[in-house]
Amino acid sequence: MEARAIAKHIRIAPRKIRIVADLVRGKNVSEAFAILKFTPKVGSRVVEKVLRSAVANAEHNNDMNADSLYVSEIFVDQDSTMKRIHPRSRGQAFKILKHSSHVTVVVKERA
Image 1 (tube, helix red, strand yellow):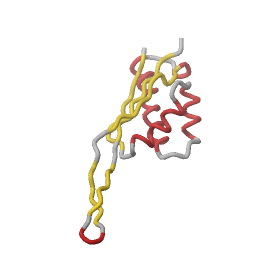
Image 2: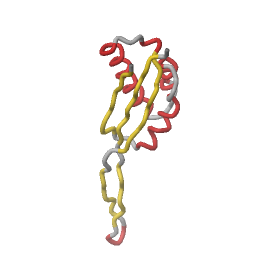
Image 3: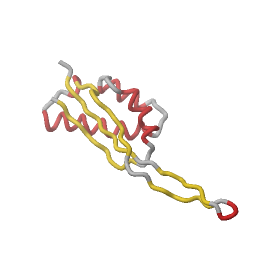
């Protein structure tokens, strides 16, 4: 059995969230929460929120024990990119790309 949670349209670049996602992949849920609590990255709050949602889905929908759960999959996909223009001197314009991402967390029970 597995339970999943997805957060869509997060206004943080996927590259920044993937750093945090790599820290908790394959860890027990309690250990993952401890790592995320003390990680000084903006993406750690997002990953923690999605992980809490996945654990709640596992307990409520599938009657799984929260103590035996682990993060089996976690991945970050790129969402649409907002394009903005920064005016420069002599009539030039530089492009600013504001990236967004989707975060997916899958938890399973250890056998």
